[in-house]
Length: 499
Image (cartoon, rainbow, N blue to C red; front, side, top):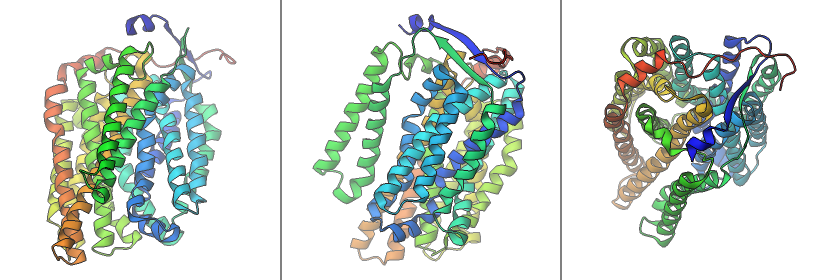
């Protein structure tokens, strides 16, 4: 059925008279960087937000998770829309929604409104990002030039999470938490003004333009319920009726998603794409990367603020060690991928992330940055440089043109949903162990530290789980073969006024 559907596809690429690839890439990369920064920029501001908007302790993590869930949950639908309706058009629609939601978040005065606008922000990012990455894939032919572009893209992804924490600390300290959202508004407005002039338009023309909305609703709903069950389990209990019911509903929706994707004529996620084993392995690694490193930033930030009593600014600057290490090694990682292949570099990156997070399990109650945090942050930061770049390349190798949006959406879905689930798991583990230690008579700082240490153990294990998947699924021959087989060509100039 999928083969039949593909016969209705033919290529139509629409661009301006001249494609300015690198200026267009720069604009798309800035938009991507904004979406990654917003995953973590609120972390150091959470105590301030909780105080100003009277958040409950159990609801606070949803300021982070609401964004990550809609970001990951609707990414595949955004990629499909980009392929069929026009990649630049959908990119601009997502950017406009993201910018408007950022303004709404800055103006929020209550818990519900901030969580809601963060969810809309994530939806805007989900619409925007796969379109942006699809445009990059179409501008650069597969091989050295695309690897260079994706290397920069992966480097931005690696550094964006920690840059977000730093920016959040600076803005919270000197301007107020609202400005972590106001920051997106002028950047988004400028990008919207420039996009029609320098970003090429491209899409696939098909006799049918069908969107798998039931699949998107079932998949996103199942994941939202899964994260909610994990996040709320410490409060209600793992054996409580509520927890069991929510987990059962999640399983039912996710099973329905698989059934829908097998039967619908134009599936949101054609399961046949996973026959590309390298793509499958890269997405597993991406899921576990998000589940380990993004959650590491979340829990590490809580440790510094709740146990060491760092200010928002001090916390942000502490993460500079990870960010600078990642940026410094991005070029090295890209060179190693070009010379030695993505598989080994990817494995090294995930091993370094796991090692850095496991090193952090030794943090004490009366810890010091240089003695207890600098080493783990630098090792994990190095791991992001060596992981993000080869994952970005491997997840897009050999993908056909009609699946460009799907592949880019799938990669980012894996990373963002991994982050949402990882944060929920880590928060649940930390809260459960903290409560157990408090009941045992430990002082609050010791109980908190014990809970965070337990969460670090789990997150380190999540990172290391990527290693068997990488060695089992990622194929050197697939990566090397696809460098010489260009399946996606650079957009060609079209006549002015062509739609």
